Length: 422
Image (cartoon, rainbow, N blue to C red; front, side, top):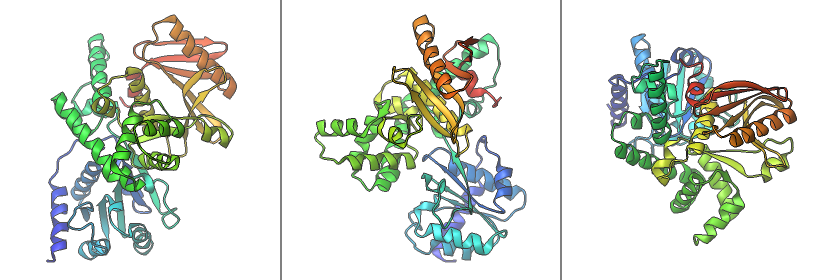
């Protein structure tokens, strides 16, 4: 057997011997769809993409299907320009082929396109990537690939990993709220959730942050590592991203950098799932491009691990954003809304020009002044966008009321996160 085939055998054997915790993903649906399309699973590094492929590998093996798994980030094979063809020679032209981190090797796009065309129906190809370029593929793969995005654990998955049984008693809700605090502080990376020691959690999240910065963002952007790392720390401390303000920050830190470089890093950090940037709601392209974008972290755990801060208002909002990303289809857009009077709404969910939902997030709404401000923003947004209802997600306040003809629902974050997931 050739040395490279030894590596293939090692990875396939490794896949067959792993026992992992199930995630909230329909594996049978992936299996069924792979008969017609290339299936991709994209998401931030360490979010569990490999685990999904390994769980799928074991499922297919139990069903007596022919299946092979290879991790293409292995340094022994990733530089081989013919590695994908060698995998076919080793595996054959039929069965289920699971290729982890497909974008690590050369010529992967044309290889996928070619083999899907030639072996469609026989060879079922399922791939993963830590970059979002499989979500909006190039022309050669358009129409051939069915994309899935994986994020760190949802709160329900987090509770499953903790082996916590949900009980809607007063004591049970108290436990849920304490676990929610842990979830927001240390995030949802699967390996982190399973570690008991909080200092070890922080060390691990910090190492993830550095890996994503170096292996994904800096590599995609083709920029200096220290520049990208400083950009990352700046975003963690910020609620909004404006290239002009960010440029001033870099200049004050002694960096000579162009505005276009920062925009390039912004785009690359989103491609690597490290950060997300959502534009203001507007019908004009000019407004969407000129107004600052709201910045969100790929995992809430980055805030405390990197900055040492716990801003519960920002953490609540970030958790809602990530849950929306899990729940919504790729064609659904998320914006924020702001009017000339300064009233703001955190999330406007729209499909094309149609607004489906508006959501406000407020950690502490016990003060009447705060409640009045949040309601005012939501009602103003509802009237302007012609939506007759709105949602306010809070720490522990629950209510329903009608304000100026707009139906407003208040719901605690933990309950909203578990909706349709219990």
